[in-house]
Image (cartoon, rainbow, N blue to C red; front, side):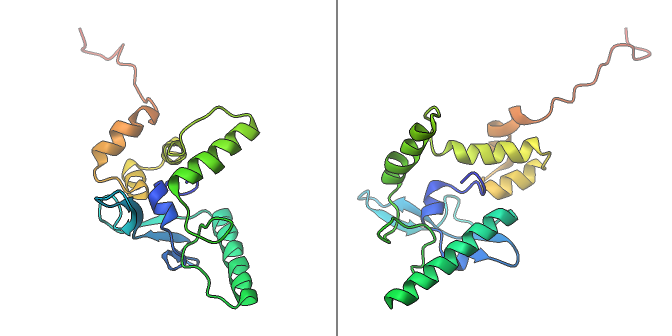
Length: 173
């Protein structure tokens, strides 16, 4: 999430065919959400739009290595490779609650870090883009925000303060 800004549901629903290795982007088309009975289901993204999220080369390398490993395991077991990128150790689709509680929070504890929300990784991604000087419209597109207003409201405080001194302007009273 910190390398892509994907929402947790988008990350869990991510499939291998959404990765473009040569273009180095993820075509985010779906997300895990809850239906009316609160059962998990794969559906459209939050704003019902497909978006392309760029991948840094280290992420491309890690995901390519994982894909090769999964293919080798499937070949060895005589099975098909799962369509989903991220799986539990037994090969099933991740559960958001288990990922938070049994993996993320435990990893923070072991590392001696304070407890933060998993969703904060997404905010870190957006904040890092802005601190690197990326255009707000680009940040909006990468995060899949519905409007630039949401991006500004969420990350506007991260913009460099470029106030100019007006004292001394000729003609000002």
